[in-house]
Image (cartoon, rainbow, N blue to C red; front, side, top):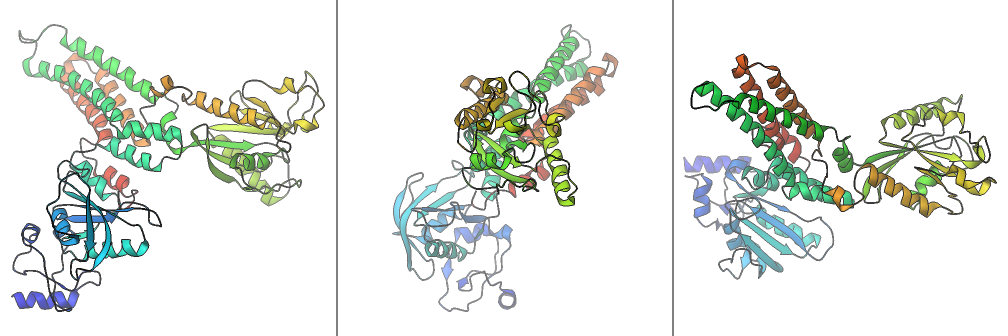
Length: 512
């Protein structure tokens, strides 16, 4: 039987699996393999056992970006992390948990030195993944990284990690909840100060604490209702319990509504404020985009209709992530291509969080106290629209008549007023999204992902259904509260969220 299995292994040996590792074929459980030291055969074509991912529970990956740098970190997590320490590090000595130790990294078969670096062992459950974790701090040359990863591949209980698998193990081990996982990913992806602050709160557990408090309050209401169901109106239940539960439910409904009525500030801050620049042709829209980007991102000419499609850039304005869109000039045209660009510009204005209209002072219809905006943009301007009056150097009137809240005057050609405009735009965005001081930061929106909003809306509907039931339907009311608690629990991942997990972790980098 043993010979038959070995023959089959030789026939189906995958190219990535080490061909020089010899293991006992009688037993295939990974616990036995971990307890037994790995034996490396001398013959280059000795048989090996093909193992599934379930039989290789220890994962490894590069946890730092590839490329030239001072240090690269290779992370190993799972029950075989300590065994990997024994076979990869010289001199062989027992690790001191949570302490960096100088070592030589060697190949587990040949014993050839791969690098001289540092290693640290994190004893589970006091590690990120709650498992035993080994980190190798090596030089980040491409050849060194490849050789170390190749050496780990020779260990039969190790396999490359899947995207987000380290963080998923931390979640499954109870180290993180879903809001912390989302915050950790957002923290890695943060490009602005505002994004960093918001993600840090979520990763640190503040978001989880608020959702947990809300869920606990709902469960408290449910407990009162279930007490009435179990004991009725007997002597063991105080008077007014049902009324108290309803009053608490009304308060919870108000709290949830306050979270939902945040104008999507959290989601906008995480993904970026969509700011659309629009205006007549030759007003300076593309020049403004180039000024904000500090480079020649858009073509600028005096020919009307130069910009035909929407050009987008991601920028940091006052610590706020802003996705700026430059659009085609708004005018009547018979050119079919330009007509499509004008239609796309109008759609972009409708979809924008903030619209910024750029108007040339030379195109204003009045002087002094009078001011007539071009007909092509007049219908698109609302009280929330920002307006930049450009080419102030061409206007002979009083520039102060053009200024006001969310109104600025500049000359992008000469640079006059550009600093004042940039400061004013940053302050306006900070005020709009409540990020202009530390006290506002303390009221950072609770909802930062679309799924948070969906679950809270469901919880609000279930609470409304509870409030709509009468005392005679108390069993149905209790079920509605139970659904509300489950809906809030889905935010932090306390119940069945397998689909959410798959969608979330697949976007992580391999070594995180």
